[in-house]
Image 1 (cartoon, helix red, strand yellow):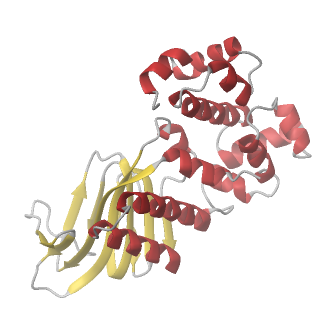
Image 2 (tube, rainbow, N blue to C red; image 1 turned 90 degrees about the vertical axis):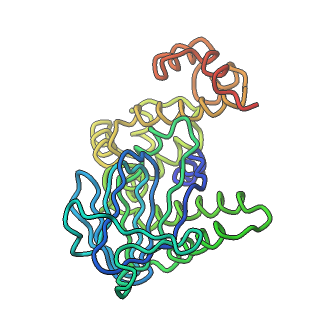
Image 3 (spheres, rainbow, N blue to C red; image 1 turned 45 degrees about the vertical axis):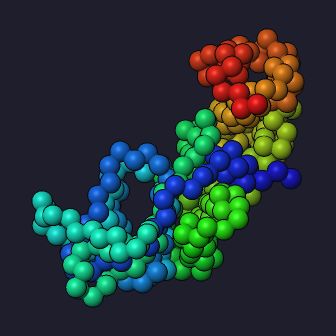
Length: 299
């Protein structure tokens, strides 16, 4: 059956941007603002502090992995940061290798950090299904994947860009796998960890063209309408039909970018006619399917 997490990662279209090996010693601080891009960090040795705007600081130690699907403002620093206003010390010792803080001080942190981009035109919806921050400790596979991305970024091998795209997809899926549990924040991962809701989510993704109502979804899940509705909204973070419609429209946008006929799209995403689909699409997206297709067709 269709895997919703794999579908979301595939539709996000992750692509490589920056990958760096960073060491730091003494007092140091790096601040980034208004990025709005995915960020990840794997701590190879030592420790540091990471503070994302609006959240409590995180202590990162050896073996920790952090992924933020959409980060805007954050700082990373030594455990005792330099005085405010101090001149930042940052030296690129070789391509993609940076030294932070006092170059003469013993290194207290060694980390691989990277930024990537999501190429999807519907990334706001897709990112909203994921946790705001993923923090995982002691997963060797994640450290290996970040190391492979770091190595591939610096090499000039055949099909380098394709390999980086695939490695990023695997990194995202592996991070999401490690986070999929009932303790995850409301969203797709927590819904997939619920044994009563996971089959429903798989059905929505596997057959978006079938007729769906809260009643039919509840019946398939062997729950009463009210119990199913409350459980779905609590675990996934949105109402069942809001989720189903959002997913259908994400798929419809992808089909329109590939210049699939409107009538065929309507059938594939669960609308009885092209006109019914056009009305729903216009209401959801803010423009008719034809206009969207002309603006975004990839050929």
